[in-house]
Image (tube, rainbow, N blue to C red; front, side):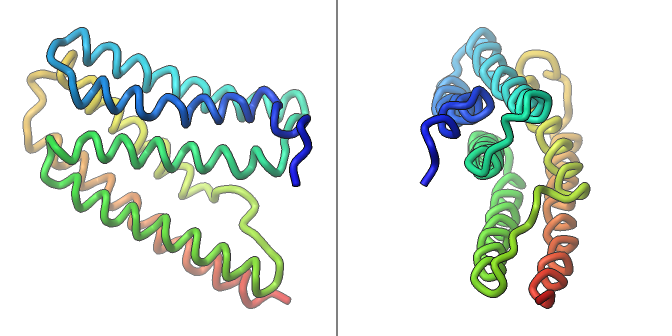
Length: 189
């Protein structure tokens, strides 16, 4: 289905690498016993974020955009975000609600995307601006939470809860805004 050339492009390899990093940052964070352990897990997440930026930049700049890459990149994004949320579920109560709305949104995206593909062969051509904004802000907040045991020790529980609630709002807003996009595309011939 995909040629060896498409499978082994630099951007796609960076996408695979991001997926491979997930169990490493989860393990180092969930078993952290010292500030050094938190540094290591934050560094792994930082490398993952950097490769996320680089794969898109390289794909566009050097004309290495592939259909496989259009699939791998969002999968790596969603798996990474989900793993970050799971890491924090054990520390922050509201994270359970974020995980629930996140799973709901992503399930809708997959289900609506498959229905659209089956109905008229169309697919969503990349994330919409509101999805990108939500993803970027969630990554920023999650990275702050990753660094919290190192740099933000004085951050109050109320501040953390407000950040999580804002992430819940962002994911829910993205879900609501995607619904008419899929409905409109479904109605097109």
